[in-house]
Image (tube, rainbow, N blue to C red):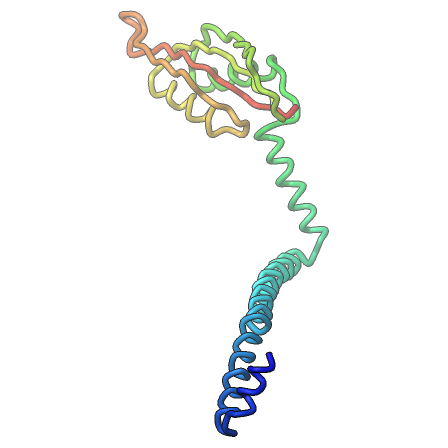
Length: 188
């Protein structure tokens, strides 16, 4: 260490200033790497978080402006809730569904030959209940198609599956025999 000190003593004044300049540049570079860059990264992350929060605030403000009359908003939500319960009611019985299916078939001049409940032993643990019926009906092809269309696009959520349309017996004047599984849903 003493040798280094003696060598530094023997340097010219301009060489000493050059070394001082080199060490000060090295020090500045280290400060930039270990202090300024870290702070700039933190600032960028904070600015990104701030932009996200500003977007959330804007969304809340837009929601509040659109729903400034909370009573009207609440009434609108109640209507939406009632419509949702029409699509998927809180409770539905087999008798209710059979009445609905029979009335709809009569509206389309279809003769119901049978409606049988289908039990699903592997019904998963869900928040809804599924009631499936196997229906057999006879009638005009177009009225049968209208029946299925109205059934699927009605107020209640009904899934139609395993649809089979067969030509009815000879001399039935264009009639078809419909066999399908109808599944209606209700909340548990």
